[in-house]
Length: 102
Image (cartoon, rainbow, N blue to C red; front, side, top):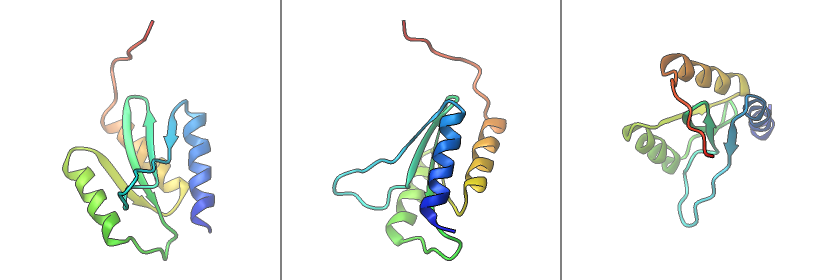
């Protein structure tokens, strides 16, 4: 299983749900998660790794910072695992309002 393959499957799934799944590149800063998901009022961050993949120290630092500041960040090894976290987040914290820009 390739990390990129699982990541691309997840991107397609998020888009199919009506969300956005962005790959952010922040100049001069390493370790940010691979994908930031905006879906149904939720923002989630995912770092994709193969089952034997190693999380670097800078990635651990960023993920811990995000989680410590009230954001959701997780290391996942498959599209299905990431989908499970998205569905868990939606079940635990449903959004009850929608904002329209006119």
